[in-house]
Length: 89
Image (cartoon, rainbow, N blue to C red):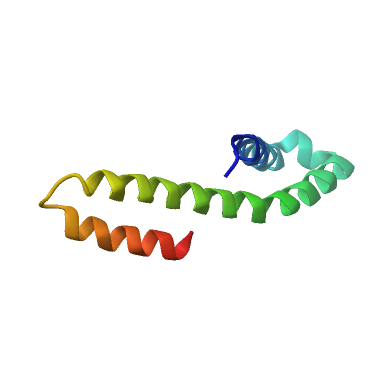
């Protein structure tokens, strides 16, 4: 994935976490218009955030499995993990 896209997704993920924290703030809850707007934004960001976190985990799994390929004793297990990670990416 292009670094610019990853950077944008990271920013969206950070915003998702920020909005989540704001929704738990008593001051925000008291302001109904702001609370509704943040709730809508949170709903829009949730799927993107979840998918990005899953993608990032798959990338980490791929890196780990590729490092394991260098160890003869771990090679077979690494090949299986690579196969599974590639199937989900």
